[in-house]
Amino acid sequence: MKDSRGTSQLSVSDRAAVIAGASAIRALAATWKFRTVGEETPAALRSRKEPILFTLWHGQMLPLLWFHRNQGVAVLVSEHSDGEIIARILEWMGYALIRGSTSRGAGRALIGLMRALREGNDVAITPDGPRGPRHKFAPGAVVAANRADVHIVPTVAHVDRFWRLSSWDGFVIPKPFARITIAYGPATRVHATTPREAADEAPRLEQLMAETAQAACAS
Image (tube, rainbow, N blue to C red; front, top):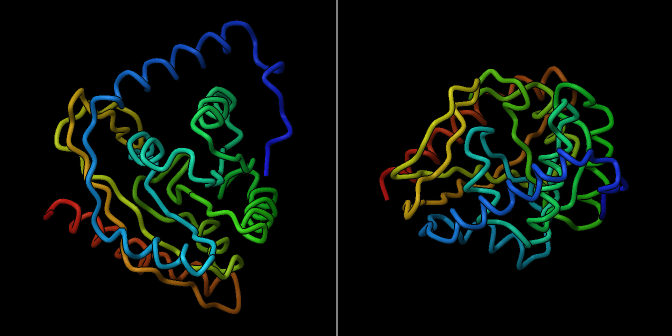
């Protein structure tokens, strides 16, 4: 799947920002060292050709998206003001784009998410994005997982040295030569008959993310 918007929509300054951002990420990421924990979970699902819904916290996007680049994953991109620059950088990393978010534009996001999964694509969402609260599943994210009826794989990154921005999500930028552990939690599904029942699953999914983070830190 491909996003229908072209780079011609970007202003000259925004295009410059995309080029500068991509160049900086490439140079920095070339020094990072990765290891994985629980990689057998997504590997088994992919071997059976079952689409995966990866859930990752908004503040950990950079190392996680870099590690999973060029793997045919579709990413939910919010429609807030700086979303277009982020979208172009994600395209440069090899991601397909789904427009909308689990809060704003949720209906459009759900349609795009379902289409991507039906086409056999893995999808990544940040259930606490685009505005938080940090490390809390938005109800829309849980409803989307329920409607998609695919396996959810909690995915987290532990970085041994990093800069943390003073943003709501505590956005993490790994420092040069950082060692990064990517951890995958157990695959799970949301089984609910109503949106309210689905939203009640949020604490369980948050706990799975927390346990996966603990596994990453302990490794």
